[in-house]
Length: 99
Image 1 (cartoon, one colour):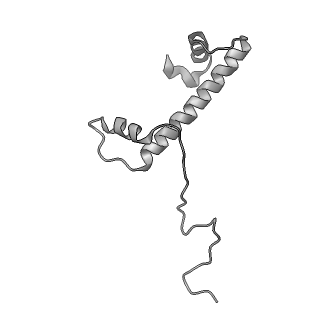
Image 2 (tube, helix red, strand yellow; image 1 turned 60 degrees about the vertical axis):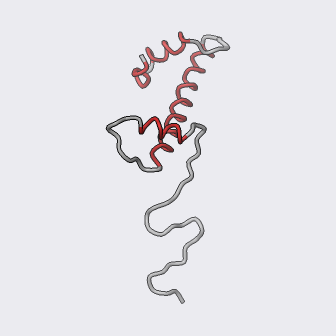
Image 3 (tube, rainbow, N blue to C red; image 1 turned 135 degrees about the horizontal axis):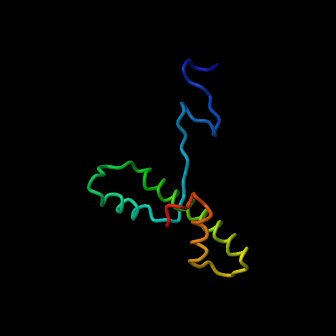
């Protein structure tokens, strides 16, 4: 018999709506935190902020490099050069801020 107010949860379920995820990144989180805190306007930051910034950088670079590799392959180039970056910025509005 279940006690009132308590549920039997599977190991994949959590109470309430919060879930914990482990985010891993290859960028140094402590260095990102230090860079963020150099701004005088930013006060305290939550622990998760540098982790999310690191993961965002990683995902952005993956997207950028994948687009650049497609351009380089189309031009039958073995290396990515600045001309490939210029073409990407010109052709794709998503990367327009790079120019």
